[in-house]
Length: 404
Image: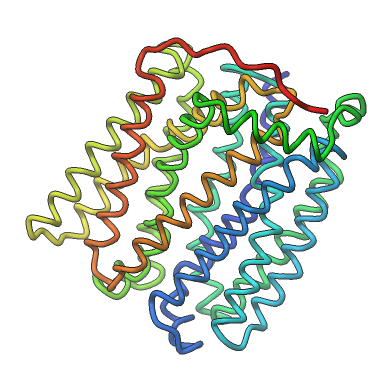
């Protein structure tokens, strides 16, 4: 595929993938305001994030097989429509329970954008070529954590936190328009006829018995969970504990995304040079050691914002190498059921993130240590799984895939 077509497709797929995260990142600066407005404590406000991630994960279990059966585009339209309606509901929520419930529905809609673009990449490419397209997709996708908090802080300053949800509703409508005009159907009718709900269930069983696939999925899940813990706690830590304004917090948050984006662009050339498995082991080890250092700093009584920002910035760069690479490796052997494999991967990763946020939320007190401890635990878990899964043993050949 020519480079301009590569980037054009990655642009649209990345934007569709980013609509859900945009709904997270934009309202992060408003979390303390939401708590005050709806009279909710820190842990309860964080449940609005947890609910979103749970439904974002569970919804992918449905969208993946459906996209194998009916094509990639119809489920995307449905998901974007549901997301739009739920976003309007969030803007009108009158209490924290209503907001949490509507965030759950919003996550169900966003799940389509979480799973289907990855399946489209697998429909078109494998190996380092897939890593190249996935990295471009991540480049666009990662614009959300850079621009969304800044945009959110501006919107919040002008309209209050409810304006964030009106903006993301409009973004979803724009996504439907882009989907209609710029993305061709990549799942052929012949392949769709060979897919069924029963086949999807059997395929899930096959994937759950594939230790190599699961290992790669959980490497990515542990890596992403560390970032999710940071998502849930960083606004309270940086605004309430360190005294940053919402705009200053947005700038600090965006630095990590710059590191993630920049590093992700090196996945394809580094993968060709040293191999994708070695790249994952190197990156998870570096991230794990950095986060262990950060945890040690806080356990020994340190409390410096600059240390938190710098060490997590470098760690985020290594995360940018891990996430797209593990996605490519996990899907490589499952092209015939790419939608289902992508769905299970997304579900497990989102649920792991939700569990990590929920556990850390039990100890959340607005101080840095609970958040840092959760982030370090996730990074070290990812490192351990990488060496177990990719520690030199040859990857066994995949079993025949069940798609009927």
